[in-house]
Amino acid sequence: MTTDQVILWQWKFISLNYTIIYTWGVMIFLTIFSALITRNLSEDINMSRWQNLLEIIVFGIENQIMEISLQNPRKYISFIGTLFIFISISNLLIIIPGYYPPTASLSTTAALALCVFVAVPVYGISEIGFIGYLKNYTRPSVFNLPFNIIGDISRTLALAVRLFGNIMSGNKVVAIMLSIAPLIFPVFIQLLGILTGLVQAYIFAVLAMVYIASATRIQRKT
Image 1 (cartoon, helix red, strand yellow):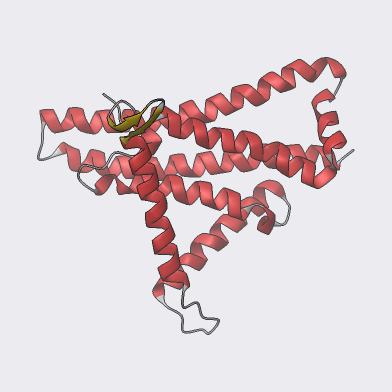
Image 2 (cartoon, rainbow, N blue to C red; image 1 turned 120 degrees about the vertical axis):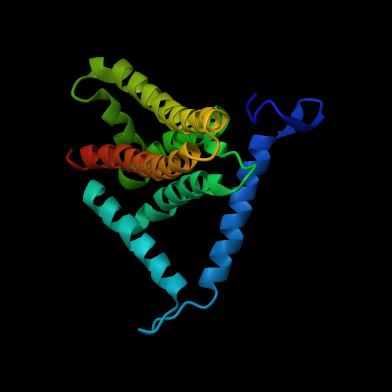
């Protein structure tokens, strides 16, 4: 049974399950945590450890965006950074007993993939206009139109299924190892799951940036 199937409350077609609870829990945690570590930001050399950590994360994300897009990272960091941090924290919190990562639910990963699907044309249109973005689907010839559309849909599905499959399979492995050797192997598997969760967050964010950058970069050449 998945977290999507555990219904806590339902009224007609509206239902509340564990996936929604965990997702909102992560969002509330991130909101409170970010408010606490950013309330006393300083421009002095002597800054808090939390601010140092925050700046390392922000600058790291900006550098990755710059290397991929060759554009000003400030335009994309709010979206790409949010994706990376949300997925990372969702996966890191598996150290809490009884917690089940929302990224192990296909509904959550599909929603994240749809955000990327919408963000690509939004950023593209904002850069070169609506007509210019539509012309990108006819390159290198008009016969490529259906294939480019299918490509957009397929990569969205791939984003959702890849993240869901990797996180869900990791949780299943931990559960199996707990039943076989509850005192030894689960610790190592849990550490491996944390590392895998961070890697998957990085891959998801990088692919999202690649899709956005490829659209705007191709259009700028014409």
